[in-house]
Image (cartoon, rainbow, N blue to C red; front, side, top):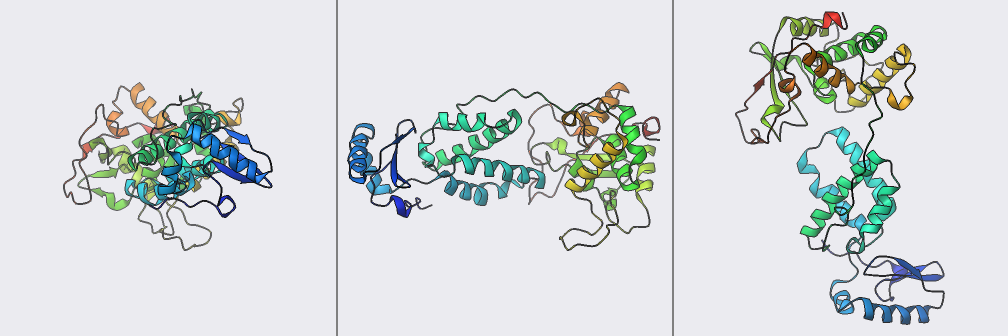
Length: 363
């Protein structure tokens, strides 16, 4: 990666001196703080050169060889293009990354990556909510680790910051609350709710379930989030009477390969099957049904649980019924060898029984 050249308005200026409209500003290379240098260009250059001599041991020689260092924006371009794609992150995760990248770029993107200090990162993180701050911090820690591996930074300023405590706003679903939502939900959404409660799977894994995943007397679920990190992510669900009845309810007059599907008002070319429901549509549809049912009238908007919280209710109900939900959830108690890669033909499936009695919940 070639170092990013200085902007035209800063050409001819010594390192760390920048044009700021008609005035000039100097950034201390040791701590990243900014200082006004007035409007007299000659005096600003002289002062910056003197400061560089005091604050940058050999700095001018390095600048002559390397040029202006890479900006965080430029390195983020590399990170998004080269680092993230091999991780095969879920679409929802990539959408979250995009939001945090925009915030990071707006606050720190124009700065030289090697000159970003702990204080700069801390100030940016303090401007966000605790949850957003911790998400952005985790991303920055990884970004600076990769920058260090490229020799662009000496240390990781994000890693030196402290994660902020998060108080989870969303509350848990109650059985009565889900019953009220279920009563006003469309049939396809009722199927999604039943699958969430019965199988304890995540939203994206429920929406990916296909009828041809049912073979050898079981529904096979390859969890997107955990299948590459743990053997627990490959789950075989025997076709219990409860699961058979639910799959039968999923079959209707809409020709679809997916258990959860709907007939859209109009077909849109999207590269997906025309009946497939995406994550965001399911989230919005569930929220609309929840708002229509209003099962939690005394909870604030931030406390209203969404589709994701059905998983927590499912695991709670399995535990209450004296059953072990760990295998269903795809959680492993220890790090296990990855059992699937692109050229690995054999997959070891973890058998888990989905046998929660839905008749007492959604009928």
